[in-house]
Image (cartoon, protein in one colour):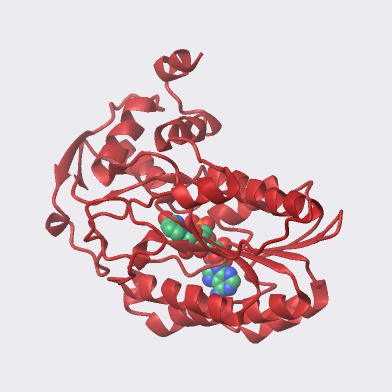
Length: 310
Ligand SMILES: NC(=O)c1ccc[n+]([C@@H]2O[C@H](COP(=O)([O-])OP(=O)(O)OC[C@H]3O[C@@H](n4cnc5c(N)ncnc54)[C@H](OP(=O)(O)O)[C@@H]3O)[C@@H](O)[C@H]2O)c1
């Protein structure tokens, strides 16, 4: 990459896309496209976009992320999450550019009792997981320079996510039943974007040091620690100040069977981040601290929590 690289960010209106634009604002000459400029359901538009921008670095945050809807739209999800990333990888390889792509904990079946490592066998339970796995494989097969960061339970102050759903339901209900037998690591889009910037900077510095071995591969990248959806909900209400008169709801843990969804989800999808630490020296904050930061950004961190942080 040059000193002022041409950077293309795709999927710019999603949780991660918004944060990547912030994290890379001063990293080079940034072109940022949402779906209306580069539609992954029509992979040919990707070839045209790459030919026009001629990026040295591509950050892809575009994805079909509606996990349950993917069960009834598997072809569209496969085009967006499987086929399109492969086309993107082919085009970036032709330019000798670096691709950064994001994948999911849902490539695993959740059957392991310990955190999943990159080499563990994949076995997605859902159409979404299958399409994301196809995307990983197509990128690998394209043979260029790529980083695939598998992450989990992404949330941020904007977009569709569990935090915002809980805050909304918390205003409406006195009691919430939340699944307490699926474990994972809630991860903020901001922490992901910051870590991605650190990884890219690391590669650039190493390139100028001429220790230019290829770091291409799959890396797990989540916040530290883990919880259940129920534990996440409890933390949200414990840490948030109420914005009206109504007290926050009682949160009751229920088994997965008590909340049937079209897509099956893994019981344990906690990922080990050791490889990321070993290769890049990068560790994301604990999910609990990342939650505080997000509540602070929403001006919802309770006075108690804010005081504890001082
Ligand atoms: N969210 C999670 O919990 C989670 C968990 C694990 C991994 N991940 C992965 O992390 C990455 C970022 O996810 P996120 O949470 O930022 O997702 P997000 O908020 O849903 O954003 C996804 C973005 O992709 C765009 N998109 C959807 N279909 C498209 C298409 N056909 N062409 C172009 N763009 C399209 C969406 O555009 P519109 O705004 O127009 O809809 C949206 O801006 C994804 O690779 C996702 O698979 C997410």
